[in-house]
Length: 126
Image (cartoon, rainbow, N blue to C red; front, side):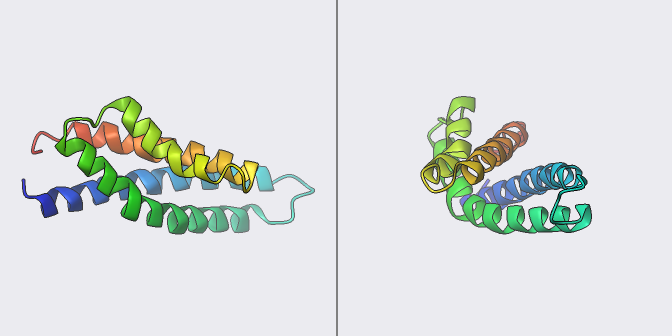
C-alpha cells in the first residue's frame, strides 16, 4: 500500500477511535452534569465535551499521533507500549498547566491510541 493511502487509512481509523472516545466522554459529562449543583444542563455538557474533544483531539491526532504512529509502523516499532506512550504523551505534556485537563487528556489519548493500534494492526493490507 502506498504511503499516502496508508496515512489516509490511519487517519480514518484514528478519527473513528477519536469519535468513539468523544462519545464516551460526552456521556460521562452528561451524567456528571445531571447533578443538581451543575452549572450546565446534561445536553450542554455533552455537546461541549464532544466538541472540545474532537477539536483538540483531532488536531493532536492529525498532526502528531498518526504521523508518528506511521513512522513507528514503517520501522516495525508499532507495538502496544509505544502506542500507549504516544497516546499519553500529549496529556502528560500539559500536566504542569492543569491536573484535571491533563488527566482527562491522558485517558482520552490512551483510549484513542490503543483503539487505533488495535484496529490498524488488524489491517492485512499494510
